[in-house]
Figure 1 (cartoon, rainbow, N blue to C red):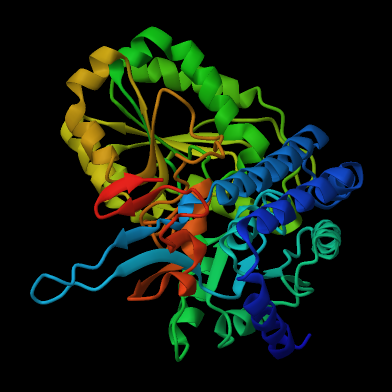
Figure 2: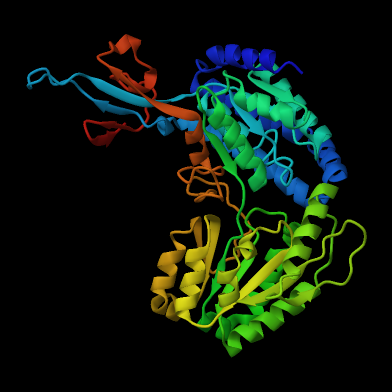
Length: 482
């Protein structure tokens, strides 16, 4: 595979694709959605064979993929996402003020690494790819080795959309996985302008290092590691222990724990209510049905991580399922004290799979110390009644500093695809906490602000022209108007 050729073709396509009007770009995204929908049956069956994921889950993921394609199509048809800002000239002041107009423009060719745990929604035609295409960037996709046939089938559907909509032939390109060196070459190629990655901490850190070593560094938007702490407050456990146990057992074991928002850390105060909840949660997890994980590599990593954690002297196994069949995950719940957790940073490590650790703290001071010891997270959850939330404001305040999404009285698994969603967080959850990889805000990763000074109206992009031909919302002399 000639990476130089691929990146050159992507750069050449970008010069044409960046000029495609928003309505035509939106129609292109809608056509991709239609082509994927037309191949739903074969795509779902192929992904099922390659990933062990159940058919209902994969059908739901296809729907999520096509829905987010339509969502971004709607975003660019409306057009205000470009954040047009206009400050008109004031020639009579001293010194004279020039005419200044700013908007967001696409950066150039983007490299997207497909994720293993979402073969549709975070892979070839997933949110990273679609947000880049919506921004006007071209995309080079590195397919994930866990589902190569699925990735290629999705890319084939995308190529049909390219042809049907008359887009530049190399608007989207697909590179089959050829190992470590291929990924490094893509990131370090001088024509690449940005990178998206969803996967392990080690993988994301390596890509960030490659990008930083370039003569011209580029941003790597990597989603990497999160144990998604959940704080259970006393009154909630007193009133809803059984319901909460069922809810969180389902969340911990959902998809065999192969979600980046899996609740891997549970935190509570030493009390009879906490002990009662732990017993109920353990019973519910023990009753869960083991399933095969995505692929053998993830299965082995889970077994290793789980065994490492349970070998810690300060951990106690609360419950686990009966011995599973070959390559099936073994859901488990462990517990430790706040003091032991604070003394052993390795207990914060993510175990990607259906494993969760309950930290029982002696008092509020220790609970706050546990929270403050944590690294950045995608989510943190508050489980509490109104009485709890009034009483524990200082704890909740700490939680809001930890993650991109703070949740009240819901399990963290499940990420709504919408404009308000933040799927990101402080390092090491992601490499840049200012951005999200889910929702329409994801488009801002692939653009940069450009200011046009003293341009004639005919020279300006439509979004900045005097008569606002696109009819979008703009900030004109500090007032929003359209």
